[in-house]
Length: 295
Length: 323
Image (cartoon, rainbow over all chains, first blue to last red):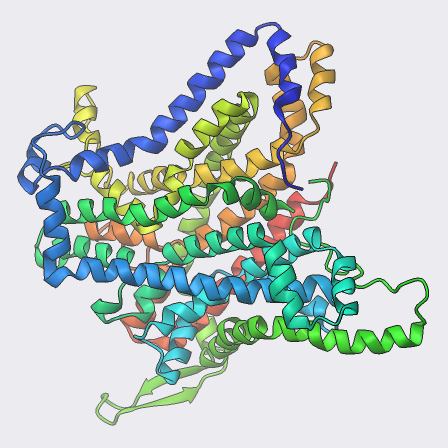
């Protein structure tokens, strides 16, 4: 299921008539799409080097005098350095929540893939059905429920949902089914290894790549969340980056304070942690992500 | 990709095969204990699942059967009364709710095919490129996926902005006077933003599906004199049908709960992007601005059932016959 086909078949294209033409079309086409994908971020990079006056006054696709440093200082000091707080919160919710989520999902996937028990089919159907229901619709009743438990306006309101992810379980089940041989588990049981030990020292160790993919996807999901924190968190100190930037941007309409320059510099900064994680873990989403989603 | 079901792995695959010498009675007993152990591994997840999915859904259904009524002139306090299905009948005849759903559905019918078509073209180009070229482009094409939805919307709102954005002066140069926030332009503007945000990810899924197509098929077609375009249309596209269905379904589900992007647009044009612009915005507004939780719960239940039905219908429709 892994390993994309090596490009051996493509040698044929070199001999096919019109292959030079084809190659040119391919590269030009891909370049156009790449330009479309990157251009808004180029503009963002340029815009975040400008101060508020230049932002409104100068050519917007090229640099004016560079004010990136003072913009950064402003972002990090505005409102008592709350931006840093939001960064920390985002990393906490996505990083820690997904870590627990991955272990829980791998355990559940192991149970579903390698054991037989009553209600297993029903359990699996529940996971599939949950894909079809927009999570935003469960957020409102969840808010009412969490406020009964006193969880609203605490980090738990973000961490608990981040740790329970049906898609992670689905992926984990598929991966374990494909990669953990039954014979190996049987052999370990013969040798007297306990079930927990088998899970942690055999299954988890064999599934490092799969678990990393599950973690990465869960992380991105929580990192991108907006409706959940908007509903659950009213205390500014608990907000995420997305929510905080949204609020800064809203000030223009609500109270006439124009923080556009801060919003743009903050937006640029907010991309760094996820981009760093994605690049560091690109090995996993290259092969695992897409194939797992399709299996 | 050979398996045709996209969302049902082989859950019923035999988990533990009995060894040749094992007696059936002993096996059944072992299965019992092993079964409990297996269920134990899934327990933490399903406990959380119950708390986060089943209970809220049940709670929403329960809440939707009640209504907070203020007695008299509102001086005597309020009481919660059981009203049966009245919230549902109100919701189904609520013109604002209905037009929010229709607005999003109409938008979905245009934006999703456009986005998937672009993603497919990108995936086909990637598949036709040399592996090394494809690797270089992949990271560039995935850049938008790394941007959180709200941040993407904040960036685009400023790109569209007549004051700070680059597009308005560019349009002036060409003799256009674009207003990206005009009532007729809001959906195309949001559509472009969502397309920008979504094509990389969808391309990745479609590209992975293309990579799984047996290369010998192309060789044979090339020997028969088929052009690259012909190969793409007649061999590659039919092969990624399952992947297209999957990406289409995920897009529909995502679209019906669209909230972030219109909310950011609302900061710029509150007159055009009203508080009931999309179903979720309407529900959010009912719950937190009007404090009408019961009604919002009924709306949530209706929308959940509706979304489930639409995606199930879509799945059945597109998965009817498989090659």
